[in-house]
Image (cartoon, rainbow, N blue to C red; front, side):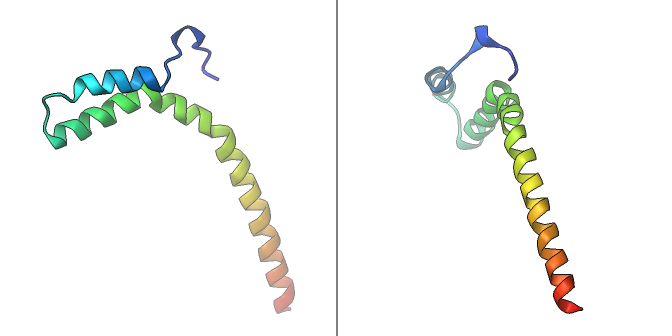
Length: 77
């Protein structure tokens, strides 16, 4: 969806890069480095890739909630 076909990196590239960064770090530094690495390399892709699913399920949830509320109001009258 982002159109970066020349820069497609899979899990193997991510694992190799993250494994090299964690050699001599404390636990807190490892967590911080991992979060930064994941966001920089995959964060935007995950965000853009999840948008269609989020919009679809938000719409489905709205429709189902609206039906439930209307049916509940009708039953109270």
